[in-house]
Image 1 (cartoon, one colour):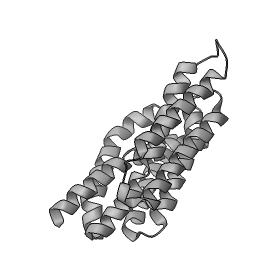
Image 2 (cartoon, one colour):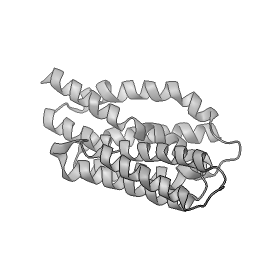
Image 3 (cartoon, helix red, strand yellow):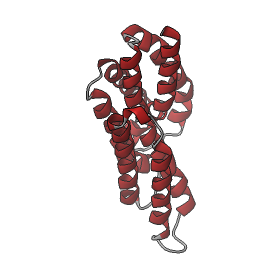
Amino acid sequence: MRYARIIGAAAVSLILALAASVLGGWLPLIVSVAMAVVIAVGWPAATGINARRRHNVIIAVAGVIACSLVTFVPDQQLIWLPAVVGVAFMAVCVAELVRGEGAKGRLESTLASVTGVLAAVSASGWVGLGHVEELYGLGTWVTLGGVGLPLAVIITVVGFRIISAAPETPKRRGLLTLGVTPVALLGVAALFAGRVLGSVVA
């Protein structure tokens, strides 16, 4: 059952991200922010991060800011994302430092939280893909075949590793996050693929 939930979450996330990029409007922002929030809520639970609420907030804020920047400053594309990740990384370090000396799992929590931040921020790439699709007029089938199909193959290949990483008795939100996270992480790859396709088609 846990395998089916992870696979289902990944499939639904990819379909929604691609559909939002093709349809445009506010949909890419809505879907990307939704992925970032799902990661923020579930990633700490899925990876066993300590002091989860602090990291929930950091991951969510980083993801929402990144998606908003790509939406409202489209000409900058992903230029601001390294700054968002950098500030979030410092916030993660501070969140662990305030737990006090000798706190259990500080290094593990830091590494896991930073990974969650990267996934949430990378979700903004799907917003950028929507802009590229509109700019170059790629069309539904070109976007699905040139971007969606390769990413689906990548997710399938790495899916077994993600499934094996799932805890034996996970919380439901943790399972959903394990499915959503690879799709969000591939947001930047989707944007890159879209730009390459756009330059070829144009």
